[in-house]
Image 1 (spheres, rainbow over the protein chains, first blue to last red):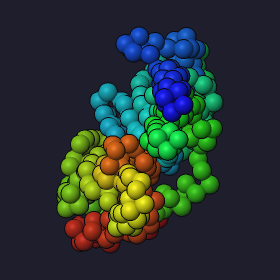
Image 2 (cartoon, chains in turn purple, orange):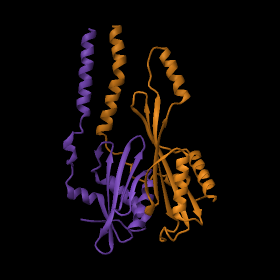
Image 3 (cartoon, helix red, strand yellow):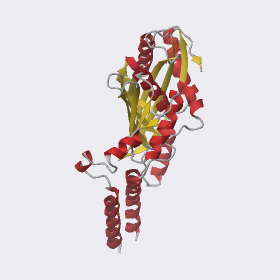
Amino acid sequence: MSAITGRRLVAFLLACIGMASCAPSTKAVMATDASAVQLRSFQSRAFDTTETNKTLRTVMATLQDLSFVIDKADAELGTVSATKLSGYELRITVTVRPRGEDQLLVRANAQYMDRAVEDPTPYQDFFTALEKSMFLTAQQVQ
Amino acid sequence: MSTVTTRIQRLSPACVMCAAVLAGGCATIPPDALQLSPDSTQRREMQTRKYEGIDDKHLMAASSGVLQDLGFNIDESEVTLGVVVGSKDRSAITPGQVAAAVLVALLGVPMDIDRTQKIRVSLVVRPVSADLAAETSRDFYVRVTFQRIVRNTAGAVTRIEAVDEAEIYQQFFEKLSGSIFLEGQRI
């Protein structure tokens, strides 16, 4: 009786582990769910400014408003990475680079726990918060 | 029968952990994760002070000094953007949890308690006038943010959160003000 129950429990545990392994192994290095073009369009917005450093500072202020703690910032490369801990772990990297003569392209990519965020809504939320602090409109790019 | 009960008792934490892994592995991002919360302004005020009549490098050096006084190691810094990032690993053992664990242990059930925590900090210095370059500005906002990850005696993560206690921020700015002989003004 006890041995059977024990075996069932072990089987249940194995099933648990099987179901939990939705993150693949090395395949994950090059894997994405959405197409690169689609992702880029969710994750990017253009702003009518050429001031990279001021934009990076505004990005950091926005991330702090969203309860992120900054992990790294690099003015030369135009990147900022930050982490939000709130019962979960959310990592984000934001890059700022020139787009043409008079615009900057801001791109964000986020990771929630062990998954890439590939849903457009959270990115839309981020750019809504960012454009408020930028006093500039975030323009969708194709 | 009693063996079975003991086995179930032993195995149930493992099941809970499996469920946690499941939840963590496959969950999607909460809808409000990248939305400004209603209390974001209040939190910004708690985490920010304004310092006038000082240059950015002096302010950043003093800020790093205060972080070091608090035992943080500096992990990253970027003067051009006014960023300093630090962290420290400390004990997370609290007398209350230890007492509870002892009581529960007396009943014959082992209990894991919070043991260590990694505390992270980032500090951003930015000119009050956004149009002014940091080199020419003399008035700055300093915003500091802390967060922590707590692990228990079994090594599992038990807390993953932002530090939101106003006294902690208050104390940090008191130390910073003391080290630069300037009073930080609330915003």
